[in-house]
Amino acid sequence: MSEQFWPEWAQHWQHHPLKGFLLSFLEGTGPFRLLVGQFMLAGTVFVDPTKTDRWLAAAEILEDDDKSHAFASMLKEETPAMSTDELLIGLVFFLITAVLILTMTLRQKRSGITPSFRKIAALARFKRAVSLSVEEGSRIHISLGNASITLPASASAFVSLAALRRISQLSSEGDNPPIVTSGDAVLSILSQDTLHETARESHTLDLYNSTLAALAGVTPLAYVSGALEQVNEEEVKTNVLIGNYGSEVGFLSTAAAEKGAYTLAASDALPAQAVLYATTEQPLIGEELFALPAYLHSTPMHSASLQTQDLLRGLLVLIMLVGAMLKLLGAV
Image 1 (cartoon, rainbow, N blue to C red):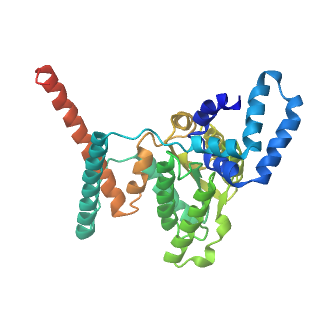
Image 2 (image 1 turned 135 degrees about the horizontal axis):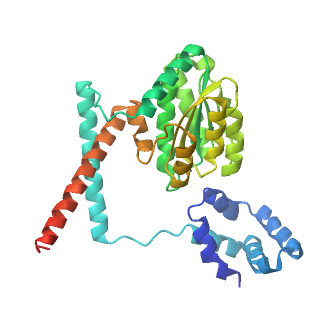
Image 3 (image 1 turned 60 degrees about the vertical axis):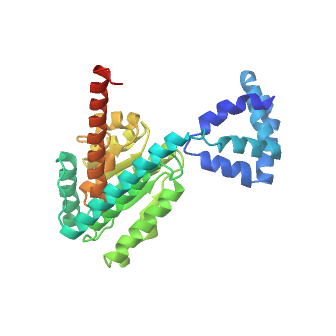
């Protein structure tokens, strides 16, 4: 009876930010999970009659060990296996990309010349804001979003960490290190480690404090509520909003604008990009988020990856044009 809802629930939770927490709850909480299930059964009388079946189905999952582990296994099901041809194409693409990045990285290290990219006004203004922050002793608030490193949105999490490292390096000459907020526990720990490592490299460990990187909340709205406290801090004059957000990011960008603070904003999610476009002066759009570490000159590898991306994009355009021409000529 209860299993009729499982496919719908599994699809809903497949890419949910709290999927990892749910799996841990289903597989590792034992008696506590059973107690929650019993409380749900006892509270059935207070549930909307139209939703009773779903409520009971959820309670049965929590109360029954076998059903709990079965639903957890459904959540962890992998996508259908790729064909041999698909695997081969993917492997070739990966090897080409890796070779290009490695080659360009080594070339930059040997020559010592940093490649130049098209100018992005927002980043030029941000560098000036960092310099001003160091001069006047104000703080930079860096919000890393709520992406988990185990989910598809992890790319934005790693980009935000790379940007955090470079920003903390740029501001290391000041008296006030950046403060960091995030909406994922693992991301919060990694941000603490990044700040500590930067402080060690710049010999400013006396200014480091683990509370500079905080877990502001584990749900989108809770995270924004926690991050708002840092945005509204008097000594914060620059905000960096980078990572995975929903439309709730508008609360942060609007608060920063009302305060008169400069905001550099970028997200990998379309709803957040739309909100940021309306509430900030010069947001980074689309792939500009992933180019951020290269523009901040984090490492030669970041610059090489951006060059490789441009080369592969040109190669794909050429392949499509050749394919279209061959199709028109009737060769394929």
